[in-house]
Amino acid sequence: ARPARADTAETADVVIVGAGLSGLAAARDLVAAGKSVIVLEARERAGGRVYGMPLGDGTTSEGGAEFIGPTQDRIAALAADVGVATFPTYNTGKNVYIRNGSRSLYATDGVLGAVPPDWGVLDLEIALQKLGSMAKSTPVGEPWKADKAEEWDSQTFYTWSRSNSLSSGARFLMDAFISSTLSMRSRDVSLLYVLNYIASAGNAANPGSVDRLIDTKNGGQESRFVGGSQEVPLRLAARLADRIRYNAPVRRIDTTASGVTVTADGVTVNAKRVVVAMSPAIAGRIDFTPALPAARAQLMQRFPMGSIAKFVAVYDTPFWRADGLTGQALSDSGAIDATFDNSPPDGSRGILMGFMNQTNIRKLDGASADEVRAAGLASFTAMFGAKAGTPVRTAFQRWDNEMWSGGGPVGATPPGVLVDFGPALRAPCGPIHWAGTETSDYWTGYMDGAVRSGERVAREVAAAL
Ligand SMILES: Cc1cc2nc3c(=O)[nH]c(=O)nc-3n(C[C@H](O)[C@H](O)[C@H](O)COP(=O)(O)OP(=O)(O)OC[C@H]3O[C@@H](n4cnc5c(N)ncnc54)[C@H](O)[C@@H]3O)c2cc1C
Image (cartoon, rainbow, N blue to C red):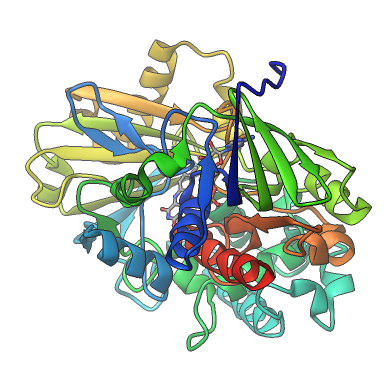
């Protein structure tokens, strides 16, 4: 790390560390409450895990967060407020399923919804029903208070899924559920964490469900933002104007007699309160003096980020639509495990987006740009035919080597963390407050959760000032 410098010293009521959606939402609300606010952002841009990846022709495609769905009310309200419209994710036709070397097509308007018909699907449905009912007994945002928290936080999702299914199809699809929502392997994550994630996929009026996590229609992938999701943080950041200091990574936070001194490269801010608005893993890289309480310090050691990348290919037309395909695929082989149609709303050109999950992206460690491109196009060709092999251009974004994200889409806990350290997730430490999607009750892991966490922390800080 570079040494912390203090070239200029400023004062504010509140300093916010991080200009992702959580920090921006907190800043907006604190400014509205009449507080003076300075936001310190490490990168040269706002948005954090929401990022428009340049396609090389002056346009962008989402390299990070992209979709919005029902019950994601707070990101919806923010988007409406800054004037960013949504449009439905292209979802007409059949999905592609590649498993054990064979490719099949399936409709998603049947009883199974987004679940592909594999051997063992009955087995899977029984397991998903059990999960759904366990999630109903998990208090949203406070899973450590579940009656069975101790039992559920003592096993991985892998362990549970193997003792609650027999068929390889059900097991593959349960692993795919974890990999497509968290970009982690099912052995990496606590059953209790997964139950909370399911419980969290809703709002106060609509309990969370597995379907809302995985579905396109009526689910988390239902809609996209016109012009790209990055428009939402960028427009909010523009409103906050020069309250945001870019290229200002915070290196240390000192709690003082009158509040906090927050030291970033090039600027030091003295404030009454500080909001740290990022994942626990990334917050753990800041030096805190005096040391944080043990529960919080150790929580930050135990909350790893997933590993994820997106690969997109641009074509003159969305040719798969003419072939009766949605552009959505799920595969057990190749570099890309799941895809979506990322074309613009008018379909004036075709864009396929492929997720490279944790296992697949790690296989590409050290690969050249050409090798990544070849691997991505080989997957698209297996899914959508030879035309997918000749795009106009491609782009690629991986998150596990982004210094200021450390991975994505979200941080998730292995067994033993939520029960013993979970209560430290949101609890302020003196004048230090915590935001970030990982701290949200509803839609933790999502843009909506990030906005909710920013709104919650703004209320908390305003009440304390
Ligand atoms: C590939 C991918 C796909 C996703 N898909 C979706 C989706 O379709 N829908 C959805 O809702 N969500 C999706 N997500 C998740 C979504 O992006 C996050 O939940 C949300 O953006 C998190 O916002 P945040 O403010 O909590 O954190 P972040 O966006 O991580 O913001 C933290 C900010 O803090 C800054 N920072 C870090 N350290 C410091 C420091 N020391 N000093 C100063 N600044 C610092 C970072 O640069 C960053 O700007 C996806 C994420 C990824 C990576």
